[in-house]
Length: 408
Image (cartoon, rainbow, N blue to C red; front, side, top):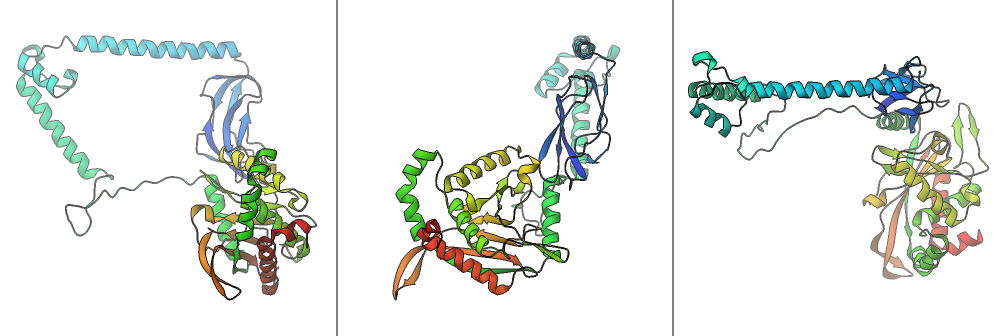
């Protein structure tokens, strides 16, 4: 069984874990292992029934076409199960042998004082060399054994790479200074590579602005209960921001475009990638045709994609595409940041935390819920004036959401 072709852009995968033990029986189409690709985690099904023989190991990076495992089809499932049962019986016999061995060890001749010391220090008699008559263990033998153990422990501490290290000050209050090395997951390696590529291969700039969310918050507060009762999902900020961006993107197709060689590719639709944080890294599955979706449709899709992402069940199709990205660092408390482009897209909008701040309204100081927005864009595709205009138009829709509903 070899690594199959998974997707057009995927040339390598990582064998993240085996789902079936080496030598165990498998049936046709039974998942035997999981592959971690650049975009998703995929199960690899058995291509035949028989006995599984591992070839690759967990953590191995494999190219498309590399050998993963073999299946001995001459061994029927019943035979494989019987072999597995035999192994277990053998292991049981080994355990029985160990028990008999321990029983024999209990017959070792030990002096009463030595036996008391062995019990106090929880020692194993078979590891103590007896010097008495016929190998009898004496008090002196136990004392010598304890001394040797102490010397070995001290020597191990000196040589151990995890030994506690003191800081240059040498003060007694210094903390533990351990280090550990872990291999990056394939998703984390992919994220790292794409972020570096975005910085090196694009003329990325960021423009900032702020939005007053008074009316958006009032809208949600007024209709939230009815919205949840009717659609079973909350009306969130993300659907409102997505809808506002989609409307302006349809008006300003250059912000929704991408560069391909010497050509600009324009889209007459808006697929917005939503950044979702997962235990293994950030993923950006797109919501397609946002320009024609209702608020409840957007919210339901975000909820479904987020659940799949955190369970590692996003398909390759669900991870592919997108013409524009929205990321919300505000849920983690970010006040302001510079989002990095999600190539090959040309723009990404960064949302941030909402803060009650004093602002001037018609010559009066008022406390308003304000959010900083950041639009990062590829200057090769989008002019500075276009980026500013885009952000201003989005803010106008968010500050007066009725305009968004009326599309004016």
